[in-house]
Length: 140
Image (cartoon, rainbow, N blue to C red):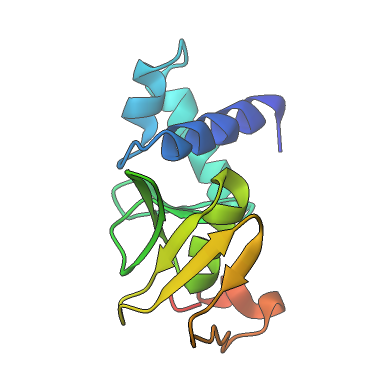
């Protein structure tokens, strides 16, 4: 990863953390002094390196644990929330940003308080070994 790619990646995470719902080369270039073309190239390189995933239109699809698209999984802290790619990622967002609730499409809630997870009867089952995640990252 080049220094510029590292800066672009950090900016992606900052925007997602701050609640920006759609992050793409246009948004990144508008919030910086970078050219849209340079940013788009950096995003493509980051995707090739499996550091994030882009949707077909070039917007951030996944910057783990954040999802750049609507999903059935959310991490909620107070009145702030973020889309996550899966249940595991919703818990990861809470681990990064603070205590709160992680919810899934089934309505099950996992609560995180001071680093302790209360699954309230839920189980997270990973069907794909971690070494195979990028074989089909959308399914994983």
